[in-house]
Image (tube, rainbow, N blue to C red; front, side):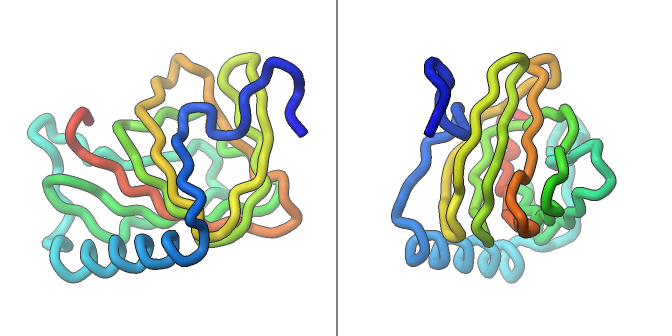
Length: 154
């Protein structure tokens, strides 16, 4: 399953496995609450940054679902076979898998791979660009996920 000495996918993540039910409830609650209560335009933090998750690969499409002074909610589409390109994660983030996905994750020379089922919810800490991090959707199907970035620390 995993190569000797290589940690599983999302090495930095703490994954909760109450998959479909919990993930669906959380995803629905986050998106609904954010869209209806917090979407008063796109607000920057005190330093003027928007704390957006970005990827250098133009084939990775994303959009802001909602944003306020505490968080930004983004939805991303990852075509099958595509690498994101080396990127950073701006602050603490919650991810919600909307589809099943097979990932390959790289941090420098450390590589791991694994499966994330639809509904999986997990936490990802900040990642600096210097950590040489990128991921690939190695599945046969496109993948969709939501990033909720907490602006504190951005």
